[in-house]
Length: 133
Image (cartoon, rainbow, N blue to C red; front, side, top):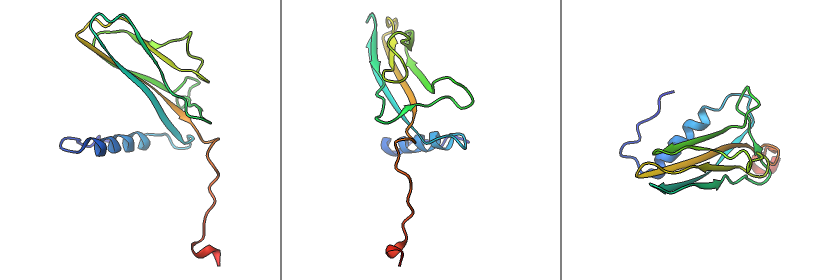
C-alpha cells in the first residue's frame, strides 16, 4: 500500500494518516493492538541514556505475527548504539530502551512496543435504535 504524501498537511492530520497506515498493515485475525513508546535526544559526547516504554493497564506485549518474539522496534538518528536493555526488561512489567555514547552532533532514539489489550476491552453489545422496541 503506497504511503500518502504528507507535504503541506498539518502535523496532527499527517499523524492520523500514519496511524491509519499502521492500522491497515495489521494482519487479519490478529488481536486488537495499541502502541506505546518513549523517546529522547542526546548531544555529542553524552555517555548513555535510557527510557521506559509505558505498558498500558490491562495489556500485554503483542508478539510479532507468526513468531514468539515481542513486537517492538527501535528507531534512531545519529551515530549511537541503541538496544532494549535485557537486564532491565522483562516484557511483562518493564520495557527499557538504552543508547550508548552519542558520537555525532545529535542523536535521538524512539523505542516502541505493540500491546494486545483485547483481554481488557469490554465485550461489544449491539444497541438497537430506540431501545429495541
